[in-house]
Amino acid sequence: RKRTNKTRRLLASYERNKKTMRSSGYVGTLAMLALSATSALLFFHTSNNLGMMATNTRVARTAMPARMMMMNKRLAARNMRACATEEFDLTQFGDLPYNALEVGLNQAIEDAARRRDTAAARILEKVRRAKHEHEMSGRDVPWYRGGSKDRDRYDGVMNMSPLEEQRMEIERTRRSQDQQTAEKLWQREDALISDVKAKGMKWDDKGPLGLPMDVVRVCDDAAKALYKSLSEPHEGGKLISMRINVDPMPWWDFPSDLTLPIGIINFLKNGAGYEKVAVIPPRGANMADLPLDQLAIGDVENADVVFILHPDLSSPERIEEVHQMSKLTKSGDVVVLDGKFGEPGSFEGKKIRQNAKQLFTGGVESIQFAMPPVKLVRNVGGDPYPLPSWLQAAGYKATGNLAITGNSGTGKSSLTNAMRGLKARDDGAAAVGVKETTLEPTPYHINVDGKELSLYDLPGAGTPKFPLATYIQNMGIKYFDLVIVASAGRFTENDLELMDELRRHAIPFFALRTKIDLEIRNAEQDSGASAQETLDKIRKDLEHYTLLPPDRIYMVSSRRPQEFDFQRLKDDTQSSLMRALDLKLAKALTRKLEVQNVWNAL
Image 1 (spheres, rainbow, N blue to C red):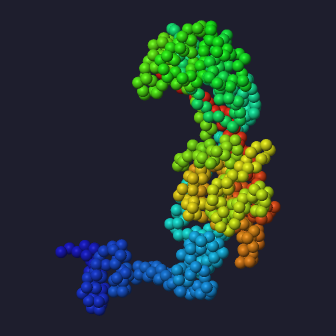
Image 2 (tube, rainbow, N blue to C red; image 1 turned 180 degrees about the horizontal axis):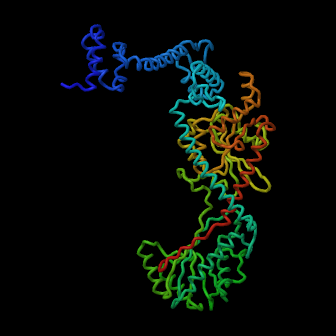
Image 3 (cartoon, rainbow, N blue to C red; image 1 turned 180 degrees about the vertical axis):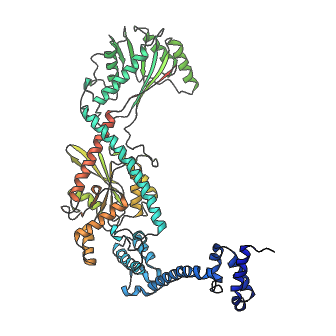
């Protein structure tokens, strides 16, 4: 047979491996022939087992050194880590707290953090860092994996695995997106405040009839809607059922609950040019302080329209009386405010309504004026939960509300006293102590430039009495105008979750490190670090975890309020609460009246 080049190369390889055939046996010979005939890729996968038999072949001489070199490097690295772990002796640090020698450093640190034993946790953290640096010594490991590479970029992040670092980056990306959404909303709010101020709109400005300007707008819009309905062509008298559901503001200091309806009637008379508008007040109503000069009280003869306030029309006889009264007017039109026409679903109620439709041939119509409350929560996401009753009862509309929250034992009550200029023993000061002293939300009121501000000392989060699972909802954290998240050490998962909730609802918040004087003293005693070095390191750590700019991060000591960032915190807090008040006023002054018309209904 004619031999091809491939066959000749195979036979040549067979002749070169005769010695190997004698020494390695039949199985080794077949394996060597297979190696010579197949590709280099197949050899790479099998050379680990057959490499010693194939050392005389050309492929083995070129592939094995690289393979063995890689294996030797891995083995050396494994041995180095094992040696480093074996050489590090925890007993050199003496008797470590929380039985760290037996349960391990990680478990001991968790036990110390659970008991809020910051002194023990600090000692254990230093031992764990020393152990980790010993294990990582001489290795080119990035800083975020616990090594020394690029360590100068940041020196404050706890050692994290690659998976933890990936999770951290995902969290940071989500938090950054929430922060950007909140900042865009704040810009729109600032534009609304500027627009209201540019128009000269103020809550204490008075308009016609001595009413606040936002009430004047309500009366004018309601009067226009009424006139539109009354001026529509109709044959015979028309019966309109009117209801007013307007959320009042704190500066609406009305002498009577009839102030708003009387204001609407006055605006209708002047705007429509009516000569006579009759008003039938409810029995026993006090009308002394109301603007009634232009209205005919109880006199319906030749009136352009009659307004009956709060009548009980739950019987056919009462409907007949109203119809007879309408015959004395010019047009026969009657407007009933908050009238009772019987139960809507009952047989009597249906009969009364049907009787009214037959008597008033001009038609019947229902008009409702509604103005919802000022929306205190931004529509940016987050889970819904109701406004706490204790916050609503405290007059949340007219004040700027600040919440001081955080884990128990971080000095929130001491901070509240310091911001009010009080000491723990002064009258009216918040109770302070080493145990959990704040057991319910406690408001403290201060007055700045004639505006009322409220500081709420909230109970500590994450305690058995106030678990984090229900803390956010029970404290109504998203209804505050500003929140200070205080911590006496590294921010915990509870603190970060609180911050995430505030970001989702676009609530401004500050990150606060309390007891900073103790931290400086401990760092100086432990490592000889200067005060500025300690402050810079802590501030960098806070920026990394909270994603806040430096101007929203504060380090204070309640016992030394003249030092550190305390005065800046106080000034920025007042400025933020003033802005919150301006925003509430701007939203209240620009509310729109909603008008709902339903024809052929009462």
